[in-house]
Length: 466
Ligand code: GLU
Image (cartoon, rainbow, N blue to C red):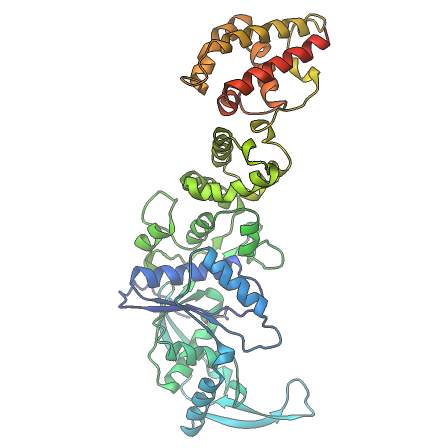
């Protein structure tokens, strides 16, 4: 193959498609092809088709069709048209007949591949002009001699087409102008062009996308690597994060910033940004995009993602104080983890202290790193906490009960007595945990009344061990 770099051709109302076989779930590779086809169609006001290549009836399953369509919709890559090859048998038959009538294909009686004792009548292509040249957007001019393919088989019988014939007929009939697909199909392109010419179709533009490699090296594998889009959805990745991550697998923008929404991608995408070099699927990078897009997520969407788990944990609505809910949402946004992780934390009670009084062992109130003797520590903690209580009581519950003011109110007391002696017990009194957000944030979230109650309770517990 000879390679020369070729520039973008400007497109007029393009028609693009992806053509997955419904023999498995939508994986990252096909999702990337879908995204590029979607972007190209959208940025030129064209159409994007989803075509199920389900001519292999034994391996095709409805369940996978549903998975593929649902996953595409979830990513907002909704196709304009959805077709199924099994519904188009008559179309293929008509074109096979045309080829036979024109002498461009012929029937051939030969032993069956499955059972050589049986004779079948296959349709073979008359391969007369075997040198095919075409231009691939990424790889440039390519010339291939397909002579050694011989008269390849087009259909198992007149009404049972094989992949190449069905794909070429469909691309032609559906007016596909741009084919963007994985590099592994570059080998199929010359014979599909020969077939298209025999059928009298117009040649589309070809763009073969670099393969996606797994971080451990080698081609990304459906079996070895976690690649199903719906699996990422179930882990709580945002569709925006996935779209952003796959956009940069094989395409590079002309700007330095890597964070894109789908709309921004539509506005920026161009075929000239597609690279030859293979792309790498990197889960760490996906996690980074999750964080970026969680920061940008609307409050409404974040609520929709997180609130059901809180409602499940606290079915009594009155427990879900708006300020506490807001604080949890903020924490989730800041952490930037996949949301299923956060749902598990909520279900496991990690955020409970925002909504109910925590229970904990009294010993937890004693700061672990104190130079005070164990004998003196409980009473020192107790008097410090009482003083904190007195200081906070002076504050208004309505004006100025926020993180900054609360901190200001107790700060010099903490500095005088020692921060860990004052702030550790205060934090444990409010959260019941040895690790939690800072006490001022919790106090702000749960409100003054709860804060005072919890400190009082902690003091009572300490009195019990004096
Ligand atoms: N069924 C093929 C695939 O999923 C489609 C090839 C093509 O896009 O032409 O890889």
